[in-house]
Length: 454
Image 1 (cartoon, rainbow, N blue to C red):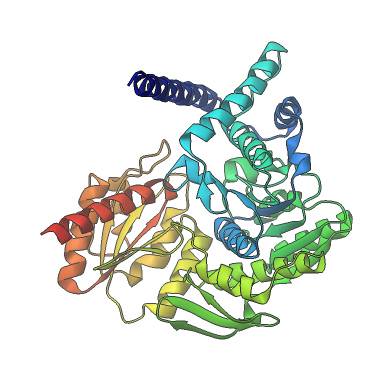
Image 2 (image 1 turned 90 degrees about the horizontal axis):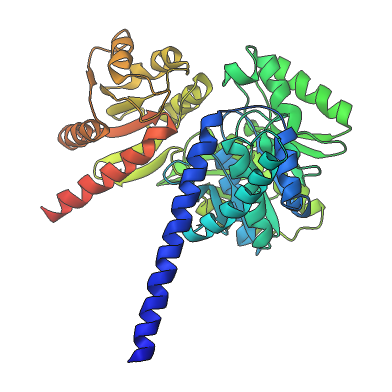
């Protein structure tokens, strides 16, 4: 009896300790978050030095670009895991939960483990502060935690997504990646990366290393091709283009997007946005390079990995009755790719939109491109410091559509859209800023459960 009581006391003590650690970490991250975004690698290098430069012990596939980074990371991770590798995956921003940014073999880090790792990173930050050095930014701290976690978890390979840009991104302290992958490049984050497409492309191309292997989605714009080729020539790096036109027999079969590709046979993607063809071909070319390096990756592992890969918020299905999709199209390039998906598989469907965007995005261009496809539009305000007031978005949307309704909450928009979708036999598409799509999914699941109970 006494032993049982001691066990209960120990469990309670442990629970309290874990809670205190998590609270400590939360306070630390909130404090660090006030510093904003500062481009440059000096603080990141110093922080990693205090942690033993563990990033140099990791084998990394480094992924940059404007759109498609997360999808490429998800596909690569899924295939490599299918091939028997222990895979660490770091992506940002979080769509639903911060823990999802840190995954080992597809499993997010636990809150307790996150607290343990982050407290080690905090020690490094405090050491820097004691020496009178600048404190790292929030993204630098989060990235350092990823390196440390994957090192401690003995990951055989790490799939690493840049946060913003490339050359001065915190992830770019990696010296010799296995492959540097560049997805499609377009205008985004002008305040940090530059006003022109050429300036942004040069920053993204900053992840290309000397004598490295590079895979890039073949740009439509000649000026981006020239920049990529110039940087590769300067770095003596080998460039391989992923060309979506090389996909053969492209079609939809049920919930899959299917095509054939040289050397791999038929590919079936459960990630069904039309733009995923381009992303998956970048993945296939990256896998070819890894196989040439000696990595054992069978064609079956490739096919199974791609079929099983999923990436929340990138044209992902969250409800079947009515059909309800979410997509993180938040800039002009993303809107064009989403439009391509709609034209490919939804030409005969009535579509209801829910839209929420950030104020610093090209929302006028997004609306102009996509609203002609809608039967009805609901606008919302994302819960984000830069979220555009949904009422203002509705006013802009009315220039391109006659049936626009502003909703004060995301829950109101989802409830109205689901009711209308059921009544009118329409599909629902929520798109825009990733910052509100997690809330959309949770609310949709709640409404679906409530409807079932009736």
